[in-house]
Length: 535
Ligand SMILES: O=C(O)CCC(=O)C(=O)O
Ligand SMILES: [Fe+2]
Image (tube, rainbow, N blue to C red; front, top):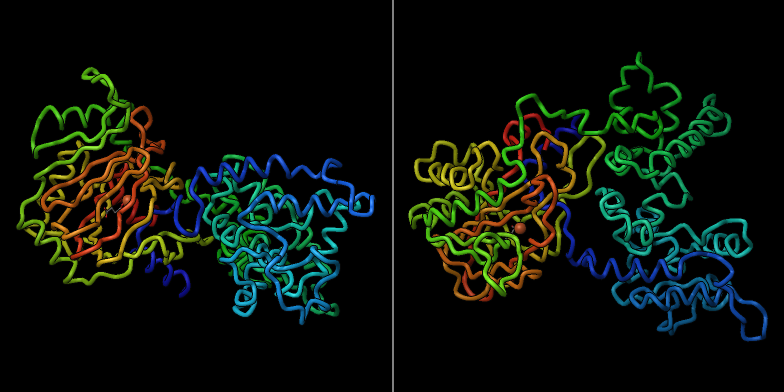
């Protein structure tokens, strides 16, 4: 199918630093935790939420609003509203149904750009006034207040909830997501658009009307089960989406074994066909016999110890775990080792030139996963550099570059097959890459394994700025031509598990151009997995 081929092509050209924890689009972990805690203190909808109103009557709404007042980032009441032109249309009662006054959210523009329809989980209630959905807000609110519904409006607190949920974050980060992104994580249910495109009914006189209605009802119950947290469900729920408004109508006839459209339907209308489990990539992409992890417990430390003992490439440990060489006062950090002369000037120049031959393009992060296993590119404000890939076409057989690729495998005690193709980076003044982690959660259990190591090559001296910084470790590394920085993304005791301490960022370049290169090394055979589209 053209759609599938197009997405597969895009996939080859993107960076997969997938789960960005602290971009402009996503609050950092400590903030998430704080908000989650705050929410957990105020969200249970029981009678403590009602207070005495101004005229002595019990007023539950006041406390409902207070929940948002507590959350200073997203107050519900629009105190700054100074025009009352359309208040009569939308204000059912004062202080109730208004646009959020978060200065970063311009509800009117969002409404104009179609977000009320495309992202109703957030916009429908947070921008109820601009979206013209105050009736819905009121109905949901009143149902909750009257005890006929056990929550208030089924909504998301953040505009990005829909995308985060579609990237699997409800499973990776439930303490935050299940509180703040209730609608996108299906904690509450309101509409079939929570698992894909809103489902349409055929006209009432259509011969399949009743069956379609029954399939919609059946799908809703099925999807509530699919969103009940479990190891399997967390791997599939976020990508199990109806990609077309007619999925449930088509499902009346097209899901069965004998229908020629069944493959398309079971992937792109998986909720309607009840085939979400078939989207599990660990089923589509089983780990082949012999594709064993290159590191077992303890091998990571042994590798770094060996590099330090060898002394080759002038290694300097900027951080290290407590070990037999424990130094008093030194903290027990992950290994971060700078190899001061890992490549030659000629090799650095060859890598820079290779990037220019192919052209540097704006870097992207991995975005939402489609049901067919492809990913959408996510152009992200948090990453403004450009990049190119030193892939087979560009670098295979290059007499200057190949020795670098082999040296990376040798120094890390891995194989060339464990490494992604080298990613070549170029930053102009002002360009940067915000705090993130290189580890990709969803690769656990896939034939490529997770990223366990990053070896970052500095290809030139930068006039000013462009340092690589590890905020949790308070380590800052200045780019120095010929050097390489090596750090783990996963843990020595379990190389499949993330080492959360090695989040890092590339600080903005201030003067000059910065050239660098990423070699991401996986626990299993990345190159073979890539051939099978199983990364
Ligand atoms: O440019 C740097 O210093 C680091 C870049 C980085 O972390 C990345 O591309 O994942
Ligand atoms: Fe990185």
